[in-house]
Image 1 (cartoon, rainbow, N blue to C red):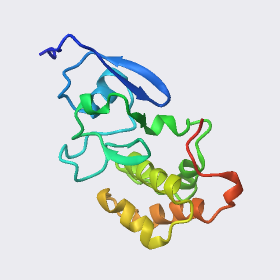
Image 2: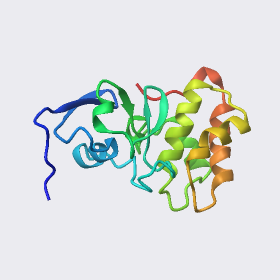
Image 3: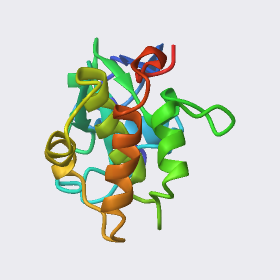
Image 4: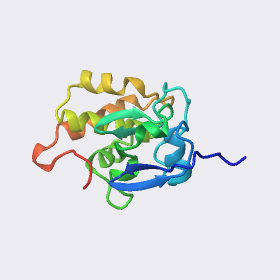
Length: 168
């Protein structure tokens, strides 16, 4: 069944570029990112904002895109996993997740990375408790929590002159 639209496209800024989305304003941001823009970093997990697999960075804050209406994203700055780095040139946090082998099945990792990146952008030197608190809204059923913590700590404890922010 085709989605009915309102006739007024919605413009959202994703990974530094404006995109015009022709979808109902009350449809979820997650669906626009995946279905309209073809981005696969944010994943559908629970649809209830409980697992964090759909996490994006919205205006600097980790946000669950599965419950955010598309219309509410208009005029906001959205960063997805694809906006941090590429397979060929991952950002420092993505590299740390690879080095720590923090993914097992990998389903939650995009949301974990986005949540951790938002934390590191706000606080480049978080404590372990800060990291745990930030990641509290992200679930991993594979049990790689300690590797995930080590990956975030690797970036937090590295040379601050090299920076932790998202790629430009």
